[in-house]
Length: 378
Figure 1 (cartoon, helix red, strand yellow):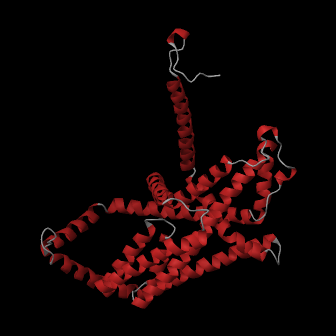
Figure 2 (cartoon, rainbow, N blue to C red; figure 1 turned 45 degrees about the vertical axis):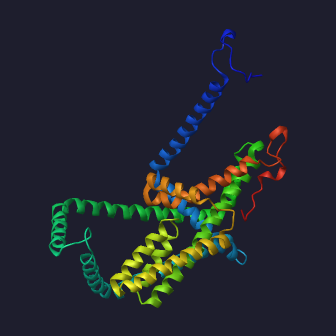
């Protein structure tokens, strides 16, 4: 038994017990941090694969209820194909509508945006010092900007070529994600049952409980976020259309996308919509846009989030902010999107492992015979 009293140098152990305990915790923390850093490094090396699998899990979480509904009247493979086709039709219809809206209103928006910029510049020029801006200064800024573009035209062209390569990578990632989604929806239960069979029997139930908790959290977060995003986008589109703001459809889609980035996504969408409203309709309409989209954000935070997601995927705002900041620093916009669901899943798994089930082999008890069974709904 280890003594809790300070070590006696005369006994041959000059290291105090508190220092020995601190050193033990220190090297364990170092090993843990090294393991986490290794996981991040490996993920970065195969970023396309990680994004594809993440998207496949998102698609699976959204389409699984539809597949189960279709599966009541048809075989599972046919239900999977029909569910994926339904998703493609819905997304394709939204994109077609947005592109048609942009093409029909783009020329009008360009003219209104130019007059709105002149109005905004006139407002800035009328402000007292230190915000006073002269016409000559504005012309000089525009000249400097055009000169910089001419001097860096080759670099801009190279970046455009890199962007084309990124488009190809994005298409390849999407294709891989859809390919994985097909198998996750059609035979995900069998795949998970096979994986569990590779786990030692004494730990199988713990893995099942932890994975079930993680998937429930991830699927709940994903489906809840999609429903909230659809609600926000629909309300924003109706509100902008009532105010007569041009390009209300693509701006509503922007609000929809911004919902997937907690804390920062909705304000960015609100700012962009307000700028478009200011350029097209004037400052009063822009003010109404800010108030309206802020009200939609309050409706999301106080009504939709608790009603749709419940308490199972709720995280403290401080944890959400830290997760988004860390994800942004590690992997930009992608990190900001995936940070919150990953943290929520990690916490759900940790909670499940902290309270192991009764039959996980602890204390010599064996798991029940039905440990290999995987609930289809899970």
